[in-house]
Image (tube, one colour):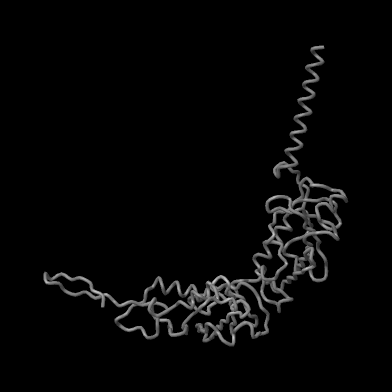
Length: 335
């Protein structure tokens, strides 16, 4: 009898151990078996990406000469680095233990062909390389995911931002950025900067003045580091306020190219003015027109305010001179 109890206890321990091990393997990435790639494709082979959401919104991205573009936005450049990183993440996804593999689960996790949160179609020319359905949340920054024609449901690490169908979330926001060393002249309201031996400085800098270098360098970063927030199309509308600009300036480059910048304040938001007639800063919406770009841009208000606040007085100071003292030593005085 005692021997039977011992055998029974051992069997129970073995069974419990197997259950724990199985549970652990199913819930840890390290314990998952190598099930092969989720999709059988290479990121480099993808030349077109279509992302659709459950509400019917659609984003099209197309690769031309290693650059990703937005064809439905006048082929405006997308953030190619971000697109490529996303594709490599999809192409490199490996199968683990499936979360489920039944027709009922496909609908429950919202990864069905007619019920999904997002649908991703990857093509090479006219050839479809793969279709992926993204479903409901599977935890922090994780989504249930299923490949077309496959009942296995896996998980994919991706936040909502990575799956946005709005074009503004995929554009190359740094399209207007310049190299500081390219700039040879800047014409701002009441201030003209020209490149000298030590970099940009006011054109009328006198011998008794000197440039404040850290402040000048900051100004150069502001002028050459513009980032756009969104696209407004190529048609200039009256409500964009470009006919009554709040700021106009130009930048000349070392190849003799001159780029003109015109900034308007959108009228629909500027109607919510305070008692002095100025729109509250938090409600300001600015539109930027750039002479070498077909698109009009939304641009964050803080960037416009920084440029508007650039003044000559903030960039220069009087030189310090040494004058002799009564004991024959010298000290500096500011003129």
